[in-house]
Length: 172
Image (cartoon, rainbow, N blue to C red; front, side, top):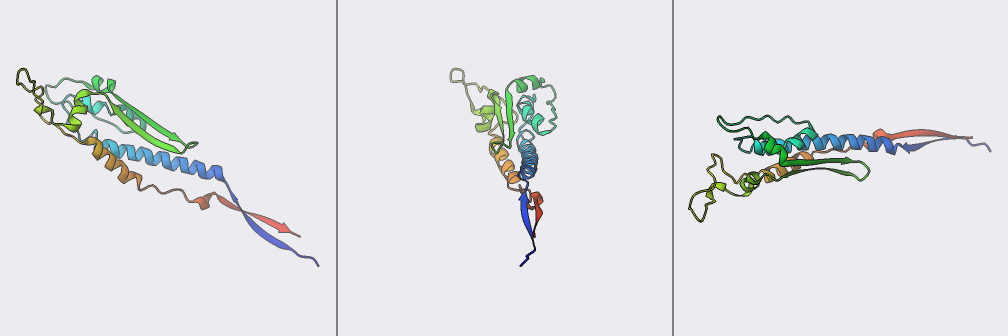
């Protein structure tokens, strides 16, 4: 008896899928970073641009353009902001870690994130330390987290079927 058969065996190109996944996650992380910046850097009050400039390192990682508009008569303190802002941006397909981190050491931005700095009074003189036009609390971190999460939940993984081919096996 002679039997002929033709089978189709699936072949998975794991490297193709990993490349597609990396591309998708890196792109979505950059988009989420832009949403984060729109909710943070673009919403905190701008006087001398120091606070906004702390976001520059993150903006450069995600391709976001920050513009600086000092208030009339305010000093240009973009350099101060640049000196007090850092960011990390990681897209590592090997570990599966896709993240960004923003840091600031700018004292008045940190204070204004949580408090109305205008309420701080020198106990010796009774005078206010600050006379801010737009005092905090800003809560920009909370707004940024929400914007990031709203973008991050829209991630759709690549279709695995695009990485599968069928190999025909003939048995004679």
